[in-house]
Length: 328
Image 1 (cartoon, rainbow, N blue to C red):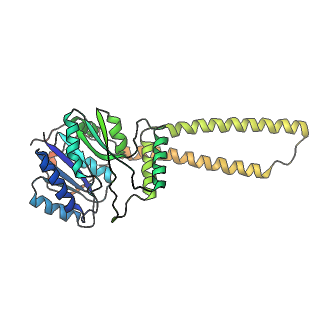
Image 2: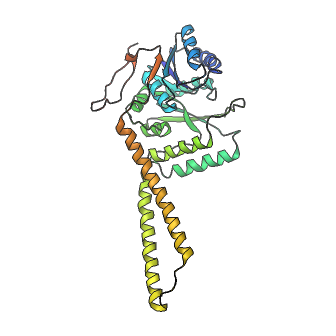
Image 3: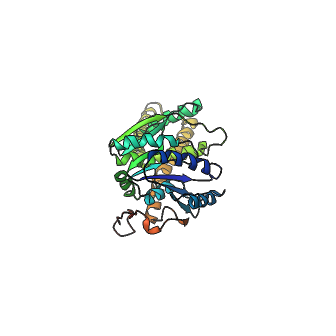
């Protein structure tokens, strides 16, 4: 059984050598053949130079380098396309995903599981962040068509048929947490202790977390659009009832000066609600717009792999999917 590791990297020059040493030690201990596919996501700090150096000294190292920063979703997709293993582990290069857990994942894989999922505990996280995260997952699981679990990220092992299933999904707007849940297959989950990085500032700012959360909400359901219909119907009913009330009062007591404050509040409130609904509709239309362009998810600048080795299962524009298997 051949194992592949897919490791997205963005500005990881400081830690990549330490990570590779720790990962190689654990992989060697498994006694199985392996490859490590590093994906440089347009780093600007020397990460690519470090990967080239690793590849020169370790024949198990493969690397892909993007022409610019395309994002982690594109990096994971590229790694999965080029990974040739019977099982594929996705993990980050910043050592927040402990390499020593790979052996444990392999044990579960050999028991027949297609997805072995590592879920981190939230020990050490700020209380406010934990509260917001749990609230978000509680809400989204009542909206989305797939179940997303709190603390579960990209750190997991996938069987070959699970990887093939993911590669069949060619959409441009990718939300991997949802895609992992959507493909199904037999899965098992285990927890590991949260690794707190005190010497590095997290790249996940509040704005990035908010945008990521919205991606998850909009990628796997159309309920916000349906909600607009319901809210519009309720507001129409309220407006009709109010109009009837005004007519009745006018018939009984005569016409009086209407309430200025009530009128302004209604106009501004309904105007704000309309803008929100237009924004939701615009988000869906924007996603359709990007899908119809059929642009590639990324462009490669440099690699030590043959592009012909790509396990491409993405349909070409106007054509059928091409299916292939890398020959080792």
